[in-house]
Structure formats: structure tokens, C-alpha cells
Length: 285
Image (cartoon, rainbow, N blue to C red; front, side):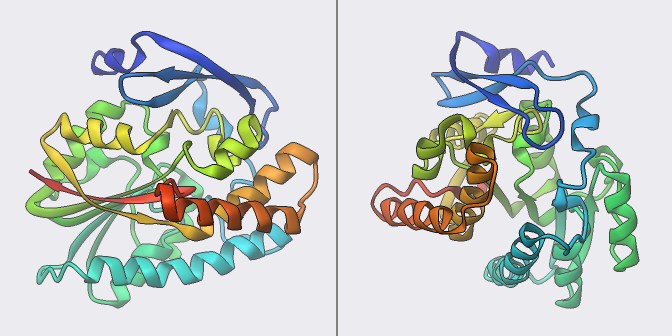
């Protein structure tokens, strides 16, 4: 945690948010001006307990509620796009590490396309589901002995990592010299974030410990001699996050309002490039 002290210097209070998923507790968002990154405070000692909810569907295959169906439908479409993205780099060895693999759908898709797959997933229940799909994952990245990965992916995972600076160094050490690191994270400078403010679902406190801007990602990886090669939008996220944000704000899913806000967010981002979530293609300098 010594390295992380740098990220907690001269923080300025921005707002407070509730944990809408599990406890309804309040947490504060503090801004690190140098990095243009916000941090969640306090960080609960028992952080793992804040993931214990049926509503946390990234760890399940739930398909019961309306929200579940929306999530699963979007996931099927995005899996194909993710595979197309990693195949665009034309690696012959095709060795991939997915950190935060959830229930294994992405790695299962990669495996079908003859990728040599490795996965990390802290949640035990998710690992069991993943194994049933033929995808074996381990609890912690320290258990991955392999190195020289062609591709390492973190799909909405970096915001959950406690020892952020140390973890970034570990990711770099696992990547081959010509490898590609793919990071997808929410963007608190998007229109939907500005519109919903403390109700914005992608703050997701306290599970999201960090809240990134494009400047933050650039500076964090520049520290380890890596650079952003390309930034791509995740356009579905503005709609899905807006739908969750409506629930936070009003107590109900207002589909039409969420659709409108999500559309406006993507429309404005065509000019600003500040999409609700962004994919960063990162390589060694």
C-alpha cells in the first residue's frame, strides 16, 4: 500500500454516494487533481461482503428479471465484438489472460476460437460456474505463473483493484514486449455521469474504489512506460448505466428516460470523446 499513498495526496471532496446494491451506506468521492481521478472513501475492511448480492449479476448467469435479460442480451453482442478486437492484433501464439473473468463467457468465446486461455476471478461461485463451461480460473493473479501474454484484458475490473499502482506493475510484467493490454473502465466525465451525479450507477461504491478519466489512465500507465495506442467507446454502456441510474434516482426503471439520456450521452461523446465507458488499448513504449 506504500505506492498507493501517492494517489491519496491532497484529495478534494466532490460528493457522496450510496451503496444502492447491498447496504445503502454512504461513501465519499474524493478527487486527486493531479491524476484527474476520484477515489472512494472509506474502503471497507470487509470489502468482499459488498459483492454478496444476487443483484451483482456479473458473477451469475441470472436471466430472470428485466434487468438480467437486458444485461445478458447486451453481453452476447459485446462478446463477439471483444473477440473481433483481440483477433485484430494477429498474434500467432494467441495466449490471453482475462483478469476478472466472472462466469467465464469471454474466455469460453476465446477458447472456441483457439486462444490459449488463462483467467483470474476472485469470486468462488463465479469460478464454479466458469469451470462448468470448461474455463478454469484462479483466485488471484499471483497464482498465474505464465508470462509473455499476447493479450491481457480487464473488462470493468481495474476500478475494483485495491493496490492499483502495484497491480499495474504486475500486469506489465505479465505482458510480452509486443503484447496488448486492454482496459475497459467507466468514465466519470461522460454526459450520463454528469447528468445523474451522485445517482450515477457506475460509481457503484464501495466496489468501485477508483473513478477514472482519460487523463488518469494515461498518467497511471505512463508511470510504467506504457502508452495508450487507441481509445474505443462502449456505446451500450450509456444505456445500461442510465437504466440503473434511473433506478437509483427514482426507485424504478424508467426505460424511456434512460434511453434518452443514453442517446444524448453517446451523441455528445461524438464531439467530446467522453463516452460512458471507454476501452483503452495499451502497449509498452
